[in-house]
Image (cartoon, rainbow, N blue to C red; front, side, top):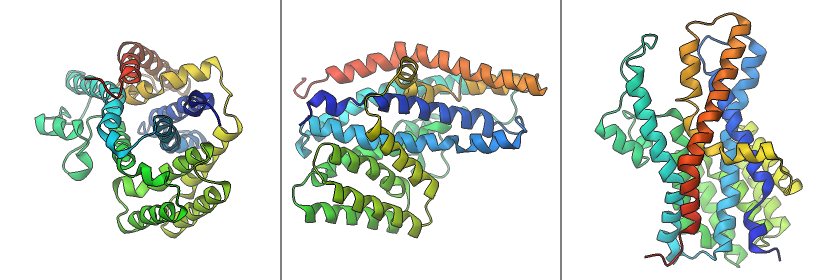
Length: 333
């Protein structure tokens, strides 16, 4: 049996995080920058950048169960688990939300900005803090990338209650759980239930890696997920990317490079901030630089500025939160 550290630290996952974050950045800076980039091939390629979110979901599907197995998670540990995740995720999230609000305020004073004020009121801020935006169609996310964090939060709650069933030694109990997951995904294709099969791809691999399930069960559930997605008109491209992500993790577990580690480390910060840093810079510059070669340097400038801001945010906010979460013990008072 592998030691606990090996089970919870898979080097290539950090590189995949960095790739996923950069894919999302390219998607927002090229594909969604309205009427700026005109090259159809580049627009088509960058449109697939949103698949970076799928990679993030699969990674969460792998690493959170591995950590729960390492710490021998039980339902009685629910509050410890949620508090630990909150320290790791919420501190950077709230800091990024504060910066996003400041950006929206500053946006009103930039001459080239157009449209109504987007500064949120108190009610909208509360909805964002507690991930309630999906439940009120009149409320918008302060930062458009925050929607995935709501799904991640729902995923943590789901695991907190149901993970013991995933590692139950009786096959029939696990099969019943899989059936419930697919049934809820079919009957209630909203919020977490819609994308839970993607998380499941990661969860099942984590269980396979720790010998909680056998290869036959892994393959059976994977085939069921694929058939379920075909049946429900789900994007097969997303499930393909999810399966490829697992294959990369399995085949290249220990592969990593310094640049991969760098982008992996700042991936969460880059994801949180790129719209209000590099994206804001690009939006400002698009009004002044319109020649093809100028557009290239505008996009590159936005990417580099986003990376710089993400690194600073990582050092000042995210890493301290990460360290605090790692040091938070079960019996802290």
